[in-house]
Image (cartoon, rainbow, N blue to C red; front, top):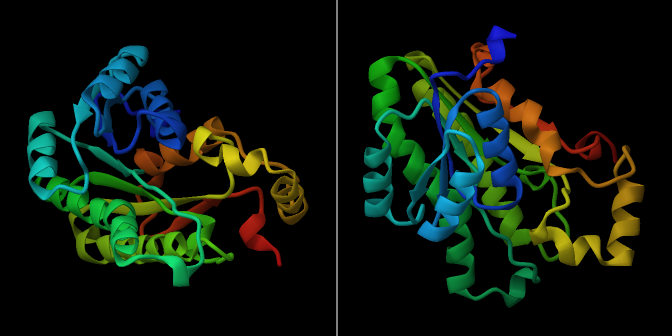
Length: 245
């Protein structure tokens, strides 16, 4: 099991004060990593960090270039970056305002670029690093009212592959997790919608929603030595949703 041991590694998980990000942070901590809990609110970061053994708070806005640079510098060494920060806005494309569109791109895509660009120089210097982005089944699929989200997650997929193209020669592995539909407070409007719940359970071969802790194996694998020759890939954790029509 030493291949999956993250002892002595520092892992920064963006957007990790709740939901899937918190579950990812807990999984990395359980594997031995010193986890940096990130969010915009210092109080929320400190509260979550206090709940996870060895964790530290890293509050900064991942869409702010200067804040990202300062936040990464304050952490010092970052061995693993998990770019999880994200949001969604459910409405038809023709109803989007330009500000709403740009807001989705900033949070879901530009933030991943900014944080990766901030940690890359130290990883290049050490000739070692792991970058894990949190994509989605919507990186490859689309549904009505989630076009903006799908566009950003499709862009994140290609950003991840571009990181591989640029940085693999420095022994940096950049991969993605593609979650399907998971039960979190952010998806509560969908999980409590009987019509959508019926559609989902019929659409997913596993016949159910995912639970956040079911992402643990994927993030530990992609953050550890077990994935040292895996690069530019998306590991879908979706109950089979992306595999069938």
